[in-house]
Image (cartoon, rainbow, N blue to C red; front, side, top):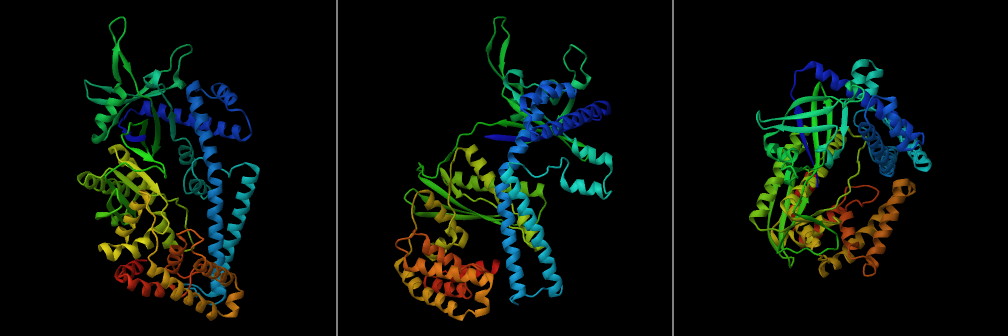
Length: 545
C-alpha cells in the first residue's frame, strides 16, 4: 500500500535555498521540454539521452522528468472519456433548464426571463464547443492543452494580478526523485538521520554545482518531521541490518522510497512516498468473506452509518459516527476530521470483534450546475477521501475490505429493515450493504409487489392521462413519456427482468421531480411506506434533501 508522509524544510541558509530554487527551475524547464517532445512523437529513450546535454542535470533527474510528464500525458488521455461524459451531463442539464423556463414550469429568481435564457444559451454554446473539442481529442489521440503553473494562475498573469517572477516560480516549484533500493533508498534525494543530534535531514544531489569528473555536491537541509510519524520515518531511512560482510561490517538493506519537494508560498515541503506493508486484503466482488462478524458502511457527507451483521446475514447492532463539519471547513481541517472519524469507527469495530468491512463501490462524477451554492457544496464533498481513508485504515489494521454495487441500498433498507429493527435510513442502508457483501439478495415482500402492481400502476397511468399536449411535445415531456412507459413495462414483466427492477421503480418514484420522475410519486410511495411503518424516517430524509 502506497503511503505518503509530509515533512517541512526548516533552514535559513539563503545560499543553499537559492541553489535549491535554481535546481527546481532547471528541472521544471527540462520537464516542460520533455513534455513537448513527447507530444511531437519523440521516443522517450531518445529524450532521456538528450536532456543531460540540453540541461545541466544527471541522467537520473532526466529519467524522472520524463517519467513525470509520461504519467501526466497518460492521465490526461485516461480522463478524456470521463470529462466528455461530464460535459454531456451539463449540456443535458442546461437544455432541461432552458426548456423549463421556456414552458413556464420555472421562473428566474434574480433576473428577468430574457436575461436568464440568454445566459443559459451562452452556457450551452460554450459547453457544446467544449464537447466538440473533447471529441476531437479522443478521435485524434491527443490531449487538451496543459498549462504548467495552473490555468487560473495563467489568467492572473494575463490580467497583471501576479508578477512575471511569481509566474515563473509557480511553473518551477517541484523536484522529484524515484527510489532505488541499491542506492540507500534514493540516489538523488536522500533522507538521513543523525542519532547524535536526533535530527532528520534531506540531502539533494545538485548537478548544477558538479565539478567535471566528480560526484555532484549535496545540498543538506534539516527537516521537521511530525511526531506521530517520526519513528516510522526513521526506521525507513536508517535501513535494516541483514548480516555482516567479509570485513565484519554490517550489511544494511534499505527500503525504496520516492521523494518529491514542492515550494508553496516560500516554504519547502518534502513528500516521502513508499510502499507500506499491510495485513488486510481487498476482496473481489465474488470472493466470500471469511469472518464471523461483518460491518456494512453507508458513507455520507455528514455521517458514517455502520451496521454489524453475522455471517448468516442477521442484524446485530449499529452506530452512527457524525462529521457535520465536513460540509463547510477548509481542506486541511477536513482531512483531520476524516482521519479522526475513521479512527473512531475502527476502534469501535475492533471492540466488537468485526473481521471484515463492506462499503459501496461508488464512481464519483462531477455534478456541477449553474447554481453556485450547489457547485460549492458538491466540490467540498469529501466522500472519495472518506472512502479511501476507510479502505487504507482497514487494510492497515488487518480487516478484509469488500466493495459492492450500491444500487437501491437506501430504498431497500427503508422498506425492509427500518421498522423491523428501529433503524434510521442510513443504518438500514448500511445493513443492506453488509448483507450484499455476504451475497444475500433482497427480494420484495409479496404485499409490496401487490401494491406496486395496483396502486403504483394506476398512479403512472393517471400521470400519463393528466399530461398536457403541449408538454408531451416538449423534450422533457417526451423523456417522461418514454420513462413512464418503461416503468409500466417493468411492472408487467418484472419476473423476466432483474430482481432489482421493482426496487428501481420505487427508487425513481422517490426522486426529485424531473424528466425521469413522476409528479406525486413521492406522496404515493409515502402512502406505501405507511404499510411498512417507515413514514417517520422517510419524511425526515425528504426534509433533509
